[in-house]
Picture (cartoon, rainbow, N blue to C red):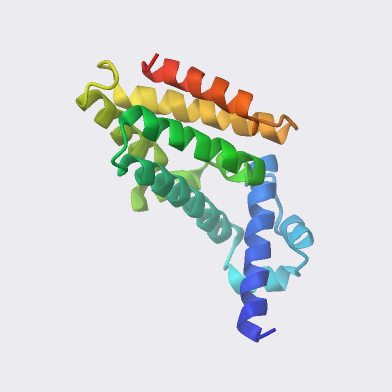
Length: 190
């Protein structure tokens, strides 16, 4: 294994450990030592990759903000009817929850780094607001406050991540259909 491969794998291990711990214990409740222990690296190795816990937290928040913004934008740009794009987005997020619910849990935390990231990155709320506005503009859903609807939709998805954290398995066809119906009701598609 080359030195750069080992370096990247250590960085990935640090980020994964931080995501898990930050989402479960909060940024302030997580120590650098705990991150290092979960990642299997020393404090010195962690500081080699990130200048501080703040720098690591900002990198993790930015990664997930960008990830979910890009996911929403992907479905917004599809040429399918609005209801199909929303359905596919919900399915994509719910399917991802079983594999990686920590990112949504992390985004549910309102931390000072999130405010900084909002100044430098487009956020999932903005992307979801634009998607909902598209549905209103096309007549697919009734007139409503798109930002409020986006916040409610994202809030419902964040709560699903909490259920997964508590051991509830959501990724079944019957659960997916029930989630889809409830989300459709929330935005006025039913």
